Length: 328
Image (cartoon, rainbow, N blue to C red):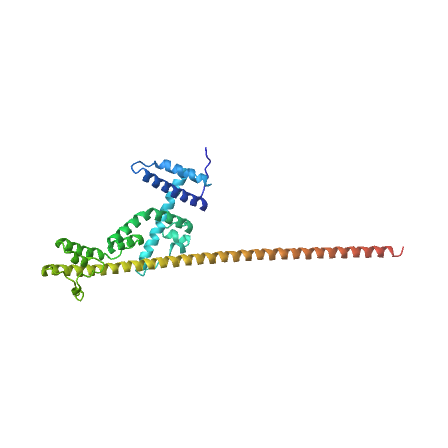
């Protein structure tokens, strides 16, 4: 029977638990890829595997302790993540609020936030959570780029940042779809007008001077139908480009703010470490001074005692001589 460790979790034990959970997730992903139709193991067996991994790494906790600690970690992580996300959203509305990492324990408790989350634990949890959500985000972004759809890129940026941008690109995107469906199949040269890429030059050199190169057999009705579609597609592309530019600028501002806060936190921690070292040096100097003064006082007391003994001895010798040399 194993004797599990009781009490609070240390930082090293917490990091070992997070590493074990990450390895378990990778193990389950590989198993699901090999056996897509097979059932996963029950939760008890998974946490038993995590317990074995933790024991091999020097974290002597049972599976129930690991499960409870993981639930607490994820609950605290989600609270801090939601708070930071809402704080970033409010920063765009010129409403400032202090970061979680700049608060003391009293302020964290007042805002119903975890009071003892360490930055290194939060960073490792963020990396693990981002690793889980990375495949779905990358696939959606790749699909948006492959279709040439700026609105989907905007939505991916919005989901990654956690804020809601103006939904201007979506209704504008639906306009050219209805126009294309209502039109008959255009000739190959008119099809190039609705594409995002610039129109290719026609084979005949007599049409280079014209602003819109129509085909020779194109009727006036087809030209009237093609021209509004072209202008609508161009306006839609401009709106989508503007929306993507706004999203990218917001991404840049958020990343800059996070980097600045990280640098400020590192500088603040460095100052605290320097201040603690200075205080420790002052305490050591004061202890040394107290010991030195104590030794000096002891030496002075010994010297005074020796002088008193010598004076007493000399006075006793003088009295004895006087008694011996006196009259009988």
